[in-house]
Length: 94
Image 1 (cartoon, rainbow, N blue to C red):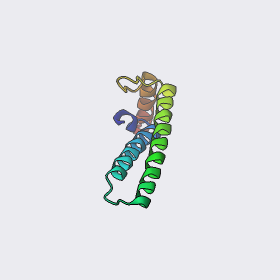
Image 2 (cartoon, one colour):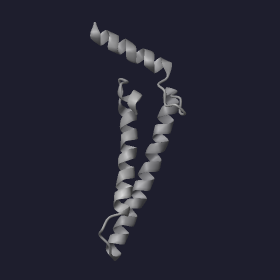
Image 3 (cartoon, rainbow, N blue to C red):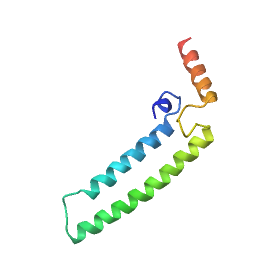
Image 4 (cartoon, rainbow, N blue to C red):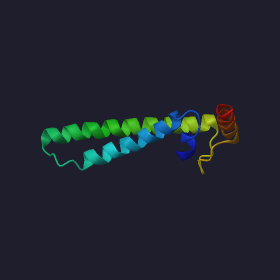
C-alpha cells in the first residue's frame, strides 16, 4: 500500500485499506459479546456480507494490480507508473 499512496491516484490503496477494514469488521462481529438467537442471525448476516464484500474487493484489487502491471510478488510499482509519478512531481515543483 505504501508505494500506491505516493502515486497520483490513491484509489487502489483505498481498496486495500477497505479490505483491511472489512477484515476488522469480520473479526469484531465474531467476538461480539452480544449473544442470543436474534444476535446469532444478525452476526451470521454481517459475516456473510463481510465475506462477500471482501472477496469482491480482493478480486478488484487483483484486477487493478494486473491492469497497472504491478509485480504481485513484491508489490513494486511498475516502471511506467514510477516515471509518470516522477513527471507529475517534477512538474509540480517547477
